[in-house]
Amino acid sequence: MLFLRNAGDAWAPNLQVERKVVDRHNPAHHDQATDLAGGAMGTRTAGAQWGGGNMEEVDFHQLEEDRFAAETAALLKERALRQDFESLIIIAPPRTLGELRKHYHKEVSDRLKAEIAKDLTGHPVSEIEQALAKAE
Image (tube, rainbow, N blue to C red; front, side, top):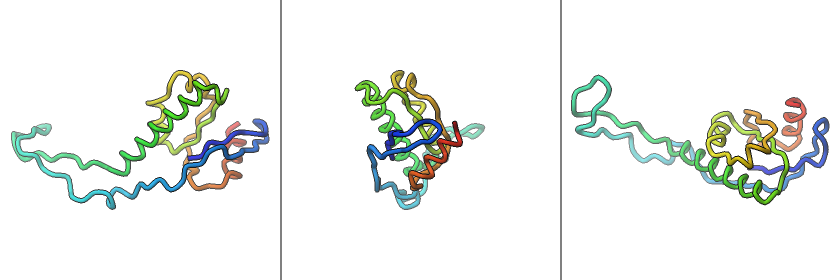
């Protein structure tokens, strides 16, 4: 996660790293799951009789991604309430962006100028600046 502040303008962004969170350990689901989803006796599935229903397997990697998005939204709320920024553009992968939206506080939503549904994780700041310039 990068928090960047634009020291330039909308036409020529000059993004400066304000905060960076790196190496958040979130292995792939298959590295976190220890067993297959179980069956539950006595559960009812659509169109089935009693007994032997299957339970969906939890995607632990996605759960962590969703938790991370909720934490990010909480941090944005804190910063908005402290008046740390007056406007905001969020760039995130589409699924993460959807999860962030569930948790936006009104103060964050009021400052939100744009959202870009794109995965730029691990990309250099110069590529993020290019994505912003194209979006304008």
